[in-house]
Length: 78
Image (cartoon, rainbow, N blue to C red; front, side):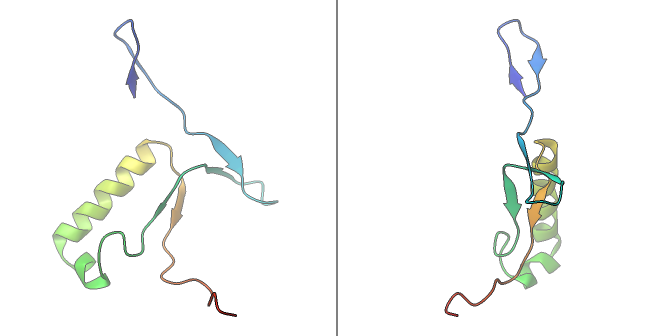
């Protein structure tokens, strides 16, 4: 939220776009998970879990609804 000149808080809305031909509205920004918080073992410890939860909460509060948690993508050399 940003503070306007009058001292009141105003909420900035996250821009949305239609995802392909699905009709689903997704945020223009997304949050990628894999390797963001370290290795898989790091997420087994409470500190890593708390960090991930905090980041997700901040992202959702900002209007992000696109989360990418893929561990790998297709082989780019094909």
